[in-house]
Length: 239
Image (cartoon, rainbow, N blue to C red; front, side, top):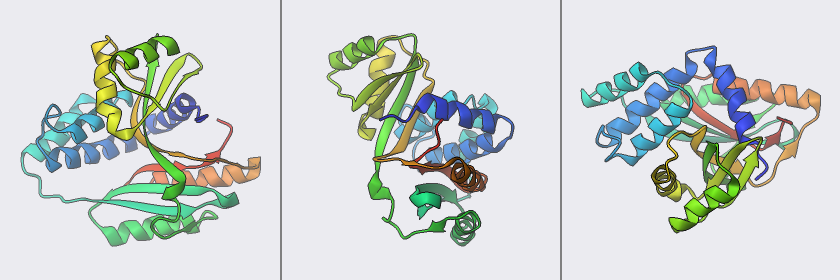
């Protein structure tokens, strides 16, 4: 896959750690997941997935509990899950996932973030076909062969297993997220540096140093929007 996932996540976590943004976004996502089904991760797989992600980003326990309690209490807020697609400088492609209680506001904000930063928003389907939905796990303290053996014993396949600077990264089908996680946990692996359902580009675009700076400014503008949960792109920024 060649995405250097561990480095990308570390950079993002470092940026988010200086603000309360990541906690607010997870609070909203946890609330929506808990409200969509039972507020119990053992019977609500969507909630379980979000909580595992939150754990890898060190989201405080009180943020998680507050969001779940809000859902249990029958919170009246209603959010729509939206996906926007667009283009950035140098032919780059971008996917923006949002949770919003005001569709018009979010669409306007996302369009403006593209337009003010050398990009433009496309129509639905204009970009997503160039990305693959993928489950990603990061594990430390194991080898590629050990992880492969664990998955084989559980009769599971992985798209790829890579050693990225000492962290084993597993790429698998999104519908195998929970089965893979459970197989690893049965084998005694309970801590993950990454546990994500993501969108990986089929091809990448290499940008010049100048264009990379402009592109990252656009990505920052999108990620800073309150309603935006996650942003995916196909730019190789040399990270």
